[in-house]
Image (cartoon, rainbow, N blue to C red; front, top):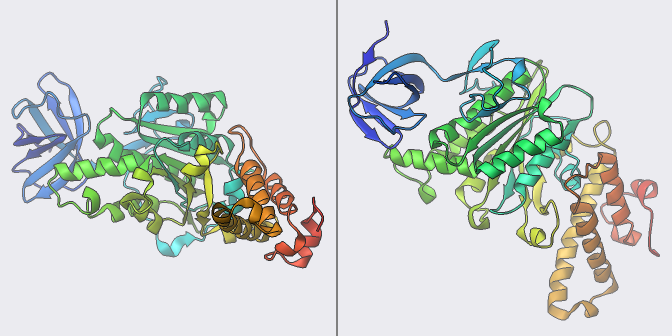
Length: 459
């Protein structure tokens, strides 16, 4: 028997409260029907005795205390899933917005997901090639990993996200697809994403969810959950390898802060709710591989750091949960280097387990170690040059500055349309190291030097 509640007891922003409700469940979906027959969806976000607070997805405009009839569904939010979702575009609540009609589902699945039993998790292995040298060589993305990109306002993270969608591949020819979720983006940015994917003819392997800046924050909060539910279905039911790109997680966290404030919760650091860590963990930890099940979910969450502050709660907590980070640098961006990846603070903690012989190439780890060590010395030489002048530097320091300029101009910098294979990236790394005398390569063994070192200058 469906019980209908004939009035509301409180309206506060996107939240409404109803008294005298029995047997309600947290996250339960409710239907609010207005007098003119229109319906709105909501979910229960708070239960206090027999009083429930409902988050209305479409907002509360036009609602009054007496013109609404509310009924509870008895279940959490579910979305329709079938193989035909590939190539489709949805809003943040997974409703089609591409004009191609509704989804005829093979199944309907709760958006909150099913936690992966830690015992059944398989250790991430093998790499995903992005075609971007600074990532593939020095902060390699591994299947089943969660590797965030820390950016800043106005930097080229949207262009980088598009390049990742267009170029990312896996090496062994298995089924590979991408779930792309954009949260709080402006209309022109959303159009840029759609047009870029269509022009590159990659939409047939992409499921896109777009939450616009003028959409309700309720929808923004549900977008990553819907995206990851889609990814889990494609990975563990259809056995594909899925890359989930979510931008911008800062918009998601700010929506969560606004929602928490409207519920009257006690704020934590910078006004964010005290449960921000566990909320982010419930999203990021949905990446992984399951033992005995073909398929994987890999995550690249993109977030903008307010005032470029890496200690801000959103990047700070994200760094605790994820397995490394790729940091974009505004100084490199000012130089016109794309993508402006700052390789020294960037790292991939699972890189060592998905590269080398059998995955990329046997010299990959050695080359990465030497490039990073040498580039770190370049920063020291630049600091010294700023004090005593470049003319007073030793020959070795001058060689380091030459290497640094070539490294930034040729290795880090690449055209947004340029897709480098891992072999091209590694060969380019050796070409740059060969600018230096052999005795300056202190992280490389003699056997590897004999095979790959090709001096361009007198040793």
